[in-house]
Image (cartoon, rainbow, N blue to C red; front, top):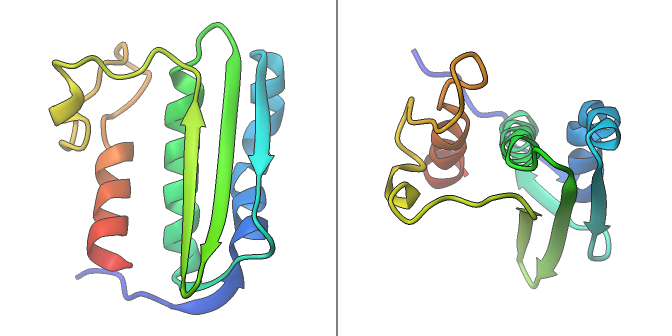
Length: 131
């Protein structure tokens, strides 16, 4: 049985901030600066729990890619009746040979115990199939 969506209208920038708040101290300790480039208040209608999961998964993935510190940039933009957000990091990136596997469930380049390989797969499913 799949969980039902609970769509509501909320402010995206606030939801992003609450989603990453638990990672801010980790970022600081690891030399990662968080840069917020938020557009004017961006109101969207979606399932806030699902969007929070997407933000958390993308942020964790970015943090894990920056072993020696770096910069995490979160950008939101309001476009007429749409909203766009992106999470960008200054980490190592995905190799050309792995780029096509990035959203495959259980695929990971992390060491054992560091990740399940589900974060990007779940994120892909939420954005593509549920929003």
